[in-house]
Length: 180
Image (tube, rainbow, N blue to C red; front, side, top):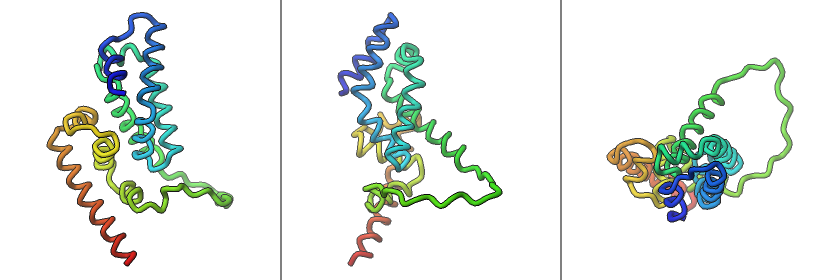
């Protein structure tokens, strides 16, 4: 996958048709990883897919500019996902008061990961720590690549990873002790 993504970044398209082809190739190669990252950011596969779609729509509309100006469209996409997720979260956290109580919703189908201790602990992490852990252990990026993607220093990546791992150990240790 890296060779396809690197090639798209190194050889930006000059004509409109080639730009569309390159974007399609980029999406085919990057989509599984972007969906995993979206799921980890949002804690929900449906919201994660919506996040990926929204970001890819924005990137696709200006693909040749993204490739030309960033040099690494995958890092750009991840950063855009992180920023978009934060914007969505800020918009959703505002209260909206209503006169009537909403109707009671019917039973929902539980997510298969809802009761998974690791996913619960991961969802409880602060946004930046969660992003660092996902990029490091799910996407296999180096500290330098994570720093570039999130536009933070390598030292911040290390400290956020350390804090996140300590928090995960504590949460998962408490879960394991509760089972015995």
